[in-house]
Length: 294
Image (cartoon, rainbow, N blue to C red):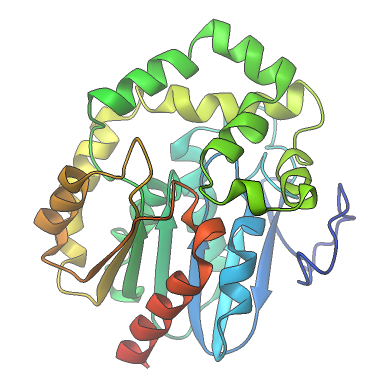
């Protein structure tokens, strides 16, 4: 059954020139981009972003099929069904069902960043035969370190919930602080990041994500062990070194320990949301990975 929805907010076609696609899951419709033809490239976002984050990466990719979802409660997707908690486990289950729905007939490239790392990789280790290659950017797949746990404890608190729900803290301040080139961006870019969260209720999922940092130790511990299923697959890392949480050699080293000494591009001029800072480098990396599995 083909599901259609009206866009919940407007975005300029100059910024986001993609057709809308919808996947119905438990009565809610997840929005996603399905652009181009060729090797499937799955582009996983984090908090509080959506497929818009990858718009310039997609624009630089030819000869591939770019597939970029908006998790439920994010971007142009519906809210979750009754009882949906916007947890990492639930969002990973959603993406699992979506990948099945796509019925891909060839191995895909999994591209992950921020919470897209655990969400995407929980699915990758579940279906390693379907994974052709990996592009990993500023994320983790293990029990977080003290800095990230402190971030989760502070922003996952009741006080932070009030600030996030009343002032849209993540989509306003958080986005700007995570883009090294923020001052050069037009206001329309930041409007596109705040548009999915117009009121208190809609901002709840952006608070759940930091709270989830402290609630997934067992799941992340298992994921770290399961990364062995992906070792040896074509993998590259692209890393924003201005990122205060993840722009550390110790984090890169941990990925190398898990997946091998994979090629790693360090970007000294990119922050956490490196898709905004250096999309052309990410696109070049994906092209190299696609060439290895085509």
